[in-house]
Length: 309
Length: 246
Ligand SMILES: Cc1cc2nc3c(=O)[nH]c(=O)nc-3n(C[C@H](O)[C@H](O)[C@H](O)COP(=O)(O)OP(=O)(O)OC[C@H]3O[C@@H](n4cnc5c(N)ncnc54)[C@H](O)[C@@H]3O)c2cc1C
Ligand SMILES: Nc1ncnc2c1ncn2[C@@H]1O[C@H](COP(=O)(O)O)[C@@H](O)[C@H]1O
Image (tube, rainbow over all chains, first blue to last red; front, top):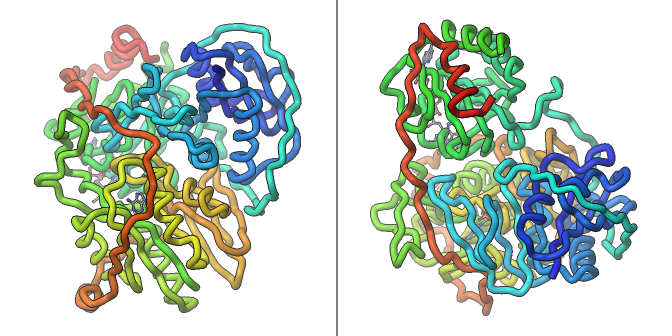
């Protein structure tokens, strides 16, 4: 038995999401952990630090999810993997289901904690329930919800081997890439801290106090849907049922009423803080900490207090 | 152009979530169902726009029992040409994907549209699975698409940004926010939807590879700790000392 983890790297090092899935694989105690890296790799990509004993490196270019799926399938066969793990981010969730079909195996998306045998727990109904899913096939293909398990250091010796496989041709041509955040902040789905604001801010010109708080906390900014729709903030910041789903450690909601469609995207946050002038705002029911007050008055005070830490 | 749009039935977000059958099944009683928002607002509307601009047809496909029919009529009212319902009660995504692929395989659709995820299962699995079953390229989380002859050019979300990509020939896409604006069906649409063709087809033989053994509702959230607005700095102390989060 062994576990294969599909790892994305950035400048030769495993990404945060990559280290998280590798940690998950290690803690499953289901045999040796092998990492598959397609793309830049320097040394072991720091994968030895989370218990990966072998790294398979595919150094040619592979960009299509169909190519990455063929590659993963070949690697899984070569190490005789019984579990194949991906991060549940966009790339992971476009490759993993393909691998499951190719290998005729069960796929469970968005797993949040360690399994019991072949029973995996995942969130469903936009975080309003969890499901225990049993896999009926021999091999299980799994994706892990980003930021749900965390990175668990467990230093070991990691051997790097080059790996090659027939992966077919590239059919989706990438013409260009535009990064969403120009300020270097962490993308929303991976962010550990998020400061979010809604219509209570009255207009885009008032976002300075939100950005100040976010930068003091090292947080990423987000917004409610109407704010995105009115063009006060870029679309990619919109969280909720029809926007991004996030699971940060800390979510601070400023001038957001807490409509059910908004909560659907944020209710898996570990700690929720709500600041709203209306004590009856529904968001308080989902909050851990609340302040009934005016954001224009309260936010600068919080920012100051954080700077003093 | 010949387009296929996969739609699914989803509980309205304001529905109370509860389970039955020893917590193995979602309790559908008193639940208002809608077309899964990503499928309707983004995938379907954009497919209809493309056919309005270039000519052709938009077929919707759903895997589900007859309780899906009102959803299918809604999609027809928005502008789909015709509809297919594969008469099955699927229990996992691979089953849905294989049933749709088996149906679509010999029908040479130019583009297969799906939503980025269903709001009940939140898997983002079906589109990639259809692509694998049919050996097609897959563009995930697309936020725009333009088509010129055989070449489609799309924007799609990717870790920390947006990719601009192009594909020649048939492919599968999943639609995310930005693709199109929501359309409210007008009276003419609603009237004509009643007579548009809805073909009910028998499912091919497919066995699911996973099963839900139990649904659980999360434990009730504890009380919210209120901090006085005049003492906002106290929040920071609580976050550090009590929640240990900063
Ligand atoms: C199918 C569907 C899908 C949807 N998807 C989403 C989604 O993904 N994400 C999403 O966010 N919404 C979504 N919505 C919209 C959602 O229902 C709400 O309309 C929206 O979340 C409200 O945004 P808001 O809280 O910013 O604005 P409002 O509801 O207008 O709330 C503003 C809040 O600010 C408070 N306030 C005002 N002034 C101040 C002040 N000075 N200081 C502090 N507080 C102040 C008010 O008391 C109020 O509670 C969806 C709706 C539908 C029907
Ligand atoms: N039962 C179904 N019938 C048709 N299409 C579906 C069905 N379930 C899911 N889909 C499509 O697949 C997309 C992703 O679903 P999921 O993998 O469940 O998150 C949805 O947005 C739909 O477009």
